[in-house]
Image 1 (cartoon, one colour):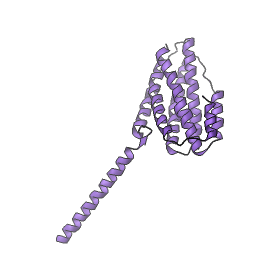
Image 2 (cartoon, helix red, strand yellow):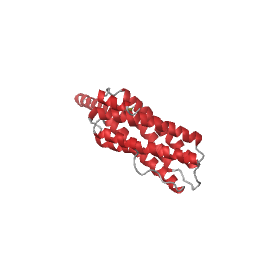
Image 3 (cartoon, helix red, strand yellow):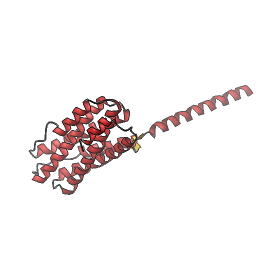
Image 4 (cartoon, rainbow, N blue to C red):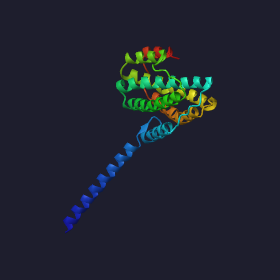
Length: 221
């Protein structure tokens, strides 16, 4: 009986240790950071933002000339982010950078679809192809690989691209007259700010790029 009790005690102890280890592993996985926040929090913000964008109902109310100009700025910035992020998803090597690019593709796909919906309701045609600046970025990225490409994407799209979109969204929220356009900016702006914050944090942890990359970046400022 004594041996049985000892064996049972050891078995219970081992079982408890296994459960504790599994709980610690789950906890560690759940607390993984993505930039400055947890992956869970980042995903939640993206999901909520996408739902708010999708819920916007376009109207046929004509846009003023000023609002049309703002719409084109949003479309231009969004297309740049979408196209370079699509390329990044296929070619970057760092897994977190790939996740950032994939989340950007998902975000901008939803935003561009809703912006197109708003534009069509008002009889406005948005640009169908990337502008010269975006094409130049894509061409440069195609000539890069490895850590240099990872850093270039985070710097150009994650940081610079979102800094520009942050400014545009602020202008739309404060200056646009159209309700649908203002709603789109209000829904998308938190996503832009979140991606900018995460990208800045990621960039500070990445090794400095080569002199060739630095020279190329200076030409885009």
